[in-house]
Amino acid sequence: MNLLKAGRIAGSALQAQRVRMNITATNIANAQVTRTLEGGPYRAKNVVFKAVPLSPKEPFLKTVKLERIQDDPQPFREVYDPGHPDADERGIVRYPNVDIITEMVELLSAGRAYEANLNVLTTTKSMYLRTLELLK
Image (cartoon, rainbow, N blue to C red; front, side, top):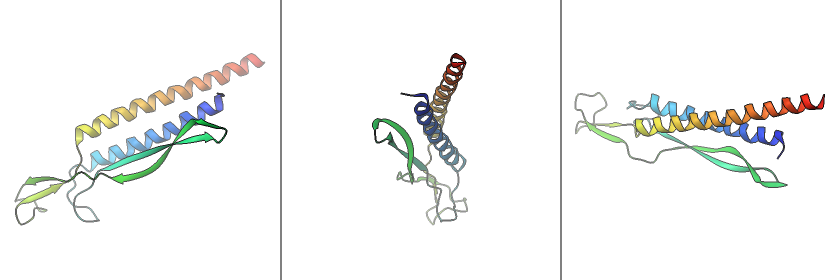
């Protein structure tokens, strides 16, 4: 595999992990939002990626592409708090379906994957520079 292909693959993975971290951060930031513009509590988002062949000639080399960002189908948390302004007639407040611990693990995982792909790009760059030095 040539170095340009390695750079393209790692670059696509970097973009994917950046999106993953942004969506996770959004979920964490909205973990207590009980009223959105659409109505109701914030619904956690999940990122779905797909592997796309780098070229038709080499279908085994894949890049990462964002397929969609979807709402998490898990039910909202319900908490009894009759004094809350968003409580229903039974005193139940519906909170977002965001699990902070899961989101933190997701954030750490995405950060590690980002770092690993950044190392691939750094190594690829070093190999390019070394090749140019050898060709002088």
